[in-house]
Image 1 (cartoon, rainbow, N blue to C red):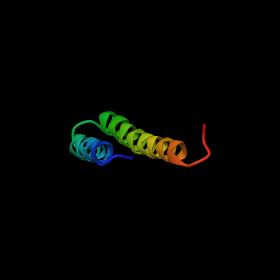
Image 2 (image 1 turned 90 degrees about the vertical axis):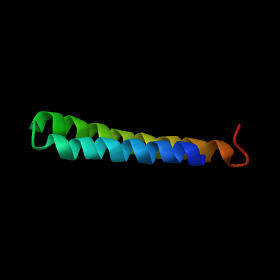
Image 3 (image 1 turned 90 degrees about the horizontal axis):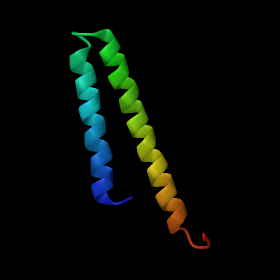
Length: 61
């Protein structure tokens, strides 16, 4: 995975988790939604990394 793409996933995950932390005191449901979005964002980053690594391995078509 490129450095820019890694930075994007790291920064967006941090922002989502910060928004989740702030929203805990205002609305619990929004905090849960933001927490789920953050987990999905982190998971999506791992999926993209695995796909990029699989495509770069020799022997793949």
